[in-house]
Image (cartoon, rainbow, N blue to C red; front, top):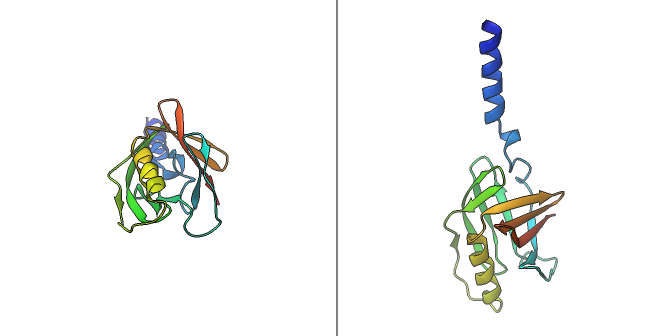
Length: 134
């Protein structure tokens, strides 16, 4: 009986371990947007390329839409992901339409798929955003 209870406690702790969370490998990486709605996103190699970063222990995200900084919270479970309300600075830029579309699309995501150094954010089976770790 003692062995059985010890095994249950160990298994319970394994299930709660952050290393088994679906987003465990996302933190401390700079995920650059490389595709939106099946269209490649032009990269400049500069600090204004659209990107997202994840603070996995707190389930928070932040990034840049190409002009403005944004942040918020997210929930993840297996292959499901939901981004909470996105907060953003409000500077006006030449490519503001791109940024508005990007943030709107981000808000409609409900699933994800990770392939190597890419995260594909989806709505049902449709890939909406593709990020590459850099």
